[in-house]
Length: 317
Image (tube, rainbow, N blue to C red):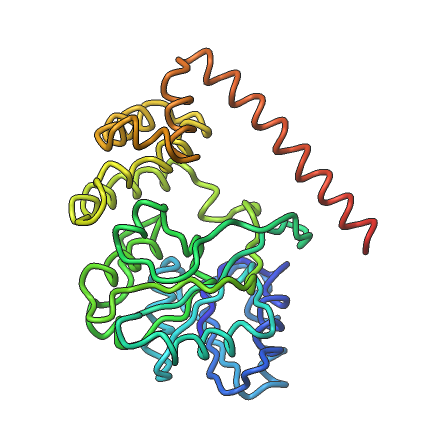
């Protein structure tokens, strides 16, 4: 198990403790301190001194892809899992993923559990919908990376042996690019969703890579151009539906409009049958003024939901 960590001092202790509490205790765990300027490394070293399964490797800052690659090189277990330094696992994360991996067959290269979303404070505010069962690359692209985050997966080491390590030239979507590479080039190309909420993902915390939407959409544009044409069962336009909706929501109308035009090649009748397709049609047809009103309404509702959930969690606590 590998944690790439850069300036996550407020949260890294919680992440490491969630690994130490795993009900499956047979693991090797390495935390790659990616040139942190805060107390990240000291916090992990204090725990490593009490748990021989934990190692800390400090290196110059080179990004999450390079940190993950170093972790892969420094470990030898047949399965690899990545836990971001600001996320946390349920105690049964590893045990359950291994159990499923043993039953689904050699064509499955990775399993992924379902995700709960938490605020920067650690308060859980709700689950994310994710599919269960087998996901080939057509489904993976049409449902916009159903694994959702890098902390949710358990991956066969053989997949990295076959397709290579993470692309250190990317500034965003590093994990998604890897999953697409596995799904199109590995001998075990399938992903398998497990309907268990075993990872808590910290949502949009200050300084996170995922909070840089411009970089995210630029990287996703490149990935879609490369991998969407490889779809065989489903129209390639479906790979653009959810990204276009997200870009419209965030106010990136230029790239959203371009993606929407590609999505429309899948056919408006087909799009109108799904929730995401309906959302795309609504955003695309509303015009600039209409989209501004939709964004304002959505942002207000979303802020109210998260604020209410946080207050409710505090009262229950």
